[in-house]
Amino acid sequence: MPATITSIAHYLPPDIYTNDYFATYLETNNEWIMDRTGIAERRFAKEGGTSDLIVPAAKECIEKRGLALSDIDCVIVATVTPDHMFPSTAALVQHKLGLPKAWGFDISAACSGFLFAIVTACKLVEAGGAKRVLLCGADKMSSILNFNDRSQAILFGDGAGVCLIEMSNDDSLGLVDQVLQIDGYGGKYLNQVAGGSMNPASHETVDKKQHYIFQDGQPVFRAAVKGMADVSAEIMERNNLKSDDVAWLVPHQANLRIIAASANRMGLGMDKVMVNINKYGNTTAGTIPICLSEWYQNGKIKKGDNLVLSSFGAGFTWGAALLKWNMND
Ligand code: COA
Image (spheres, rainbow, N blue to C red):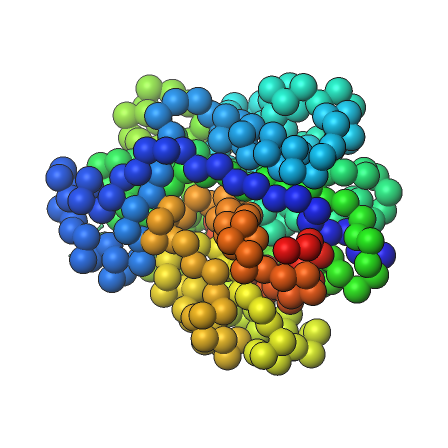
């Protein structure tokens, strides 16, 4: 019996920043940003940490399922912007929610964080290591963004998606298959240089702005187009899925052109692709669960639907998963 999502919710901070906001102080404009990325606006949280993005979504998610706080026995947080290097953001979420019986941990896989975490959570539940996992994908990207670098400031946003993972009540529904990959050769193209054990924080690292995102956009773009399309096609092939069999592609939202390339490789029209990058930008570990939550809330995912989750991110990390949806309308 597979494990599956049994409840889902998301949270986005209220403050919206349009492309025009950046055009007021950077050499950029709405047309360039829309054309090259598909992003029109994003949300930035004014205060708090990533755990504060997670908590409202987590409360809603648990409430919708009608569970007591003591029913949650594990918290997994996928993030690259933890509140602190330690303790884990999972521990802070446990404490803020007051979950009396949970253990848990963080997963660091950048934009593939939620994908790697949902596979981890499902396998944990299937193996009997936990009964109900509160699975959170969230990032406060504004905390590591260089707002004076036009090539990165415009790309990212803050947000959280949270779901519950439990055993499925139907053998045929839930997480069916996954293809996951990691290759550290890509580390040099997208990273945060300082703040870890290799380059601990110092005056010098701060002066050099090494606590912000570093990204060499073009190699990341090229690797993402190939990586995401390859695994999306592979998961279809492995499961004998034709394009008509796929209800939705649920891609990581980094760039509309990367998303379109994956859809094209899968033979899917854009009407079968979840896209909200225009509204929220790249919320890193948040993008896939926020999409799932929004689409489910709007009645656009039906029980039995084949969903292909697909992502690419820093590491490099990438992968795809086949999820047969198991929640009623
Ligand atoms: N506004 C206007 N011009 C900009 C700009 C902005 N916000 N950002 C960069 N430019 C300029 C560059 O300086 C460059 O100018 P030059 O030709 O005078 O040097 C020009 O636009 C082209 O830059 P380039 O980096 O080649 O553009 P691009 O088409 O590759 O788009 C990204 C840049 C970042 C949008 C794109 O590379 C990308 O999406 N990469 C992947 C990012 C990603 O997915 N990261 C998350 C993890 S998966």
